[in-house]
Amino acid sequence: MTAVSRTQLRVGLISDTHGLLRPEARAFLRGSDYIVHGGDICDPAILDDLAAIAPVTAVRGNNDRGAWAERLPETTILQVGKVHIYAIHDLAQLDIEPKAASVRVVISGHSHKPLVEERDGVLYVNPGSSGPRRFTLPIAVGELIVSGNLVSARIVELAG
Image (cartoon, rainbow, N blue to C red; front, top):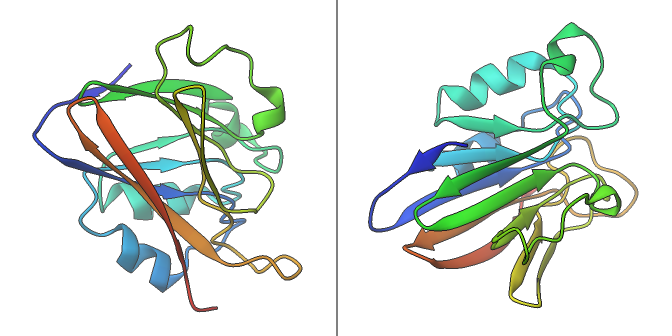
């Protein structure tokens, strides 16, 4: 578990890059205190590029293959301020009860569909896909703003 502490923190959210880190996504993530990648990275160089912006936490997606990907966890919990964040690629494989585990935010990817939804006191966020366009789904990224134990989320659609 990694802990970060300050008055207000910005956590950049990205998922499903599928080997493409768009300049617009990189620009959006600048200024983040931390970055969470929700999986389907498909190219380890993307993690290096993101790490040049801020510390990165990434989970392995179903399309992440090879020795580099095997080193990535399927799930992880990190603490930002007083907020516990659980990251998993495919929300359908959620293996904990977030509220019981004191998790405030669940970050996922996989569906390519941006989502910000609060259920039973837990904020579920899928930043959508920021890689190659899939079907008619938007190209998007997201962010969390954490202040103590308060957290808000937003999704930003990128030109693409």
